[in-house]
Length: 164
Ligand code: FES
Ligand code: FES
Image 1 (tube, protein in one colour):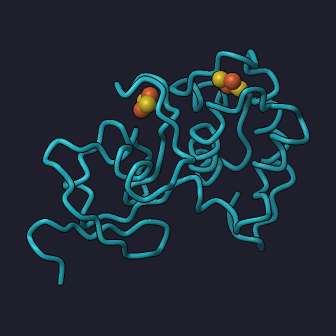
Image 2 (cartoon, rainbow, N blue to C red; image 1 turned 90 degrees about the horizontal axis):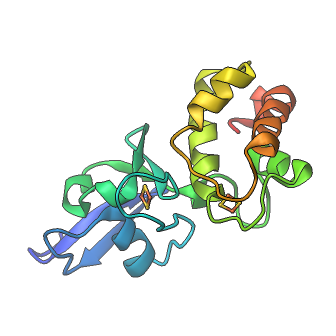
């Protein structure tokens, strides 16, 4: 049982104990600074850029806008859950193959967003892809290669391997 200064968080299938989280602490801060999950990036801390995107009970959210305390009984999935260490998911591989990564700062948020999108729409149009990633800001790529990566991932995805 956690004491009154501890919170339990379910992150990527593991139950983790957080000590002394402060009242206004964001989930992004907790993930990065307390749990060492540095995949979720911190760019704006205002819900504007999408670089901190995670799944919270199957819903795409900006971790910078979620209070850690409110996530205590929820299922949290971060970019680290996308593929086992040392391997790449379908969409990660497509990003590599198309050169959709430049500085990479936006990439984790985009990958979480795109996985959520492709799980619902397996055969998207370019317009639907652009709309899906419109909340994720990228300063480097011009988005063309990202759209191409999503297109390729949607075609190469093998249902039997479970997810993008
Ligand atoms: S850091 Fe959360 S949306 Fe930009
Ligand atoms: S690759 Fe640099 S911000 Fe997107």
